[in-house]
Amino acid sequence: MTRVAIFISGGGSNMLSLLDAMEDPSFGAEPVLVLANSSKAGGLAKADARGVPTAAVDHRDYSDRAGFEAEISKILAQYNPDLICLAGFMRVLTPEFTAQWENRMLNIHPSLLPKYKGLHTHQRALDAGDTEAGCSVHLVTAALDDGPILGQARVPVLDGDTADDLAARVLVEEHKLYPTALRNFIAQRG
Ligand code: GAR
Image 1 (spheres, rainbow, N blue to C red):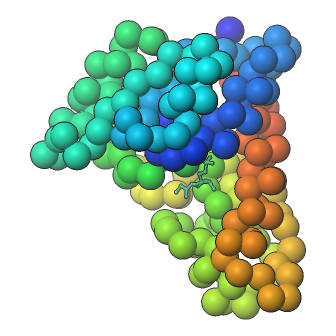
Image 2 (tube, rainbow, N blue to C red):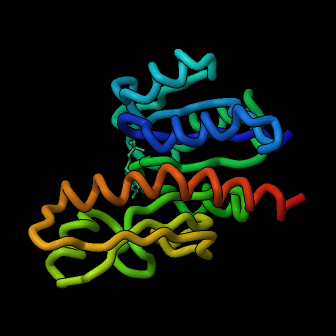
């Protein structure tokens, strides 16, 4: 069984889609920890309700990223995950941390990478006049939203779409893409 830690910052809808998928024994993975960078992250209570251990490490309690990550690493050592899935985790991780988890940390990003790394992806797609948008699951490397792509899903941009409309349409696909990409990644990893 592959042991998976999931990092969140907010409501955790992608986290829930991963938890749901891992309930299938054929998935070959189990969630061992959901960690948030704020105790206010709504997803923590949802993970707790599913019986998954949770932890909160508030980045505002640390003067630098290294201190924040040292605390995260201490907690990870207690739960001993094989993989980390970033699922709406909105903190940038240091090259030291990403190197430590090289080929063992996945992220979902709400754009068709390499387009629109960083924030405000949906508004940027609308501003560019794109006719399609989507999401990507990729391995995390030191450069932001830049690692090898494991899977993508596309949606049309419709006339009159707002960024919120597009975000909602993409999110539906995120919930399918992330479990599929994780399942395939685990199967290929052996
Ligand atoms: C998702 O749309 C995810 O792709 C995005 O945040 C949202 C989190 O929603 N992630 C990023 O923007 C990462 N840079 P969720 O908490 O409901 O899963």
